[in-house]
Image (cartoon, rainbow, N blue to C red; front, top):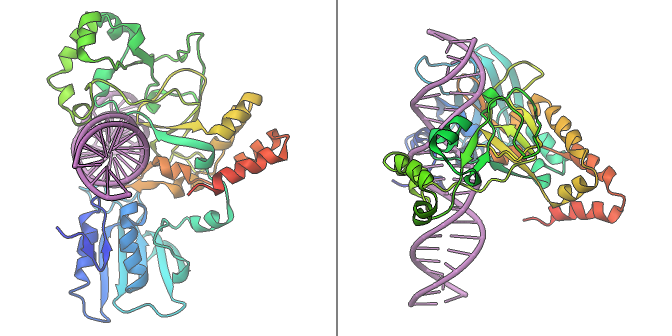
Length: 376
DNA sequence: AATAGGAGGAAGTAAGGGTT
DNA sequence: AACCCTTACTTCCTCCTATT
């Protein structure tokens, strides 16, 4: 299949509807009006950039209506919907585009006209006008934290075990790391630790993480070998395990200082769907969390002022939901998600100010900014 | 049955190391 | 240096399921 449409090349992850719209350009007469009812996802995700490029520069974009994600338009599909309307002519100077949101196409809940020249193909078109914050703010969360998604085990039921299961299978403790339960079972926003580094929680879980080759396991840890053998027929054949060696080895994710839940639904106006968790334990976390590891500058500051962790954690939880949501994406039915890079895009000048106070030597502070300015 | 949260497949990229 | 291959993640997408 050709990925080249109107000169732009599309990512292999692009939804078919984008191909459809772009290819139909060849069928449309000059000056005709095109109206599309389609997923609104292209406005949030990376694969949508070439389509947005097309809508900005090749045709005259008249209106985009986004249905509210909570109001699913099709009974049998959890997809967020939009109506995209444009005329096949080059856009005039100072052209205004109507962006409407919520309600119906004829009676939207919100309507705003935006200058075409203020829209960019590489930013999100989700009506939160995050472009303003982008231009005025300098530091982002990714300058302060390395953000990673939690580990994908390949089979949580097999690799994440309760203490009873650990005992029943006689698994050696040196291959077990504490791991947090999923957000559903985690009520607290702060994880306390016992002297061994195990989190103090009702639901105690351990990740089976052994990197020894199979022969070594068979020779030295017969009970573990026996347990692994029981997963060889199904677990080891799954996509993730199949491409790892040995198949039961796990990704490397040290216990993070801070975590963010990876998906959720808006609960109320002032409490967003994402929670930030302060972790004092040695527990790692699975891919239902995003893990925030302090970068060098923050690590240094934390050594001098450990209480800073709590301040930053409070700051993160105090972020207005709107700011966080505008970086993420939303799926039909109102399920919000945040990918690591999207969390990293959140403006973090507030944290830089907190850090600034901890730097007695001004040159160190300068170094902090220099560090991010010289990154490509 | 609805809600809220969950899971992992699979393509993609980056980095490292060996070979031509 | 250019190329190839492997490994180790990263990102995006879509459907699933436990709890109420």
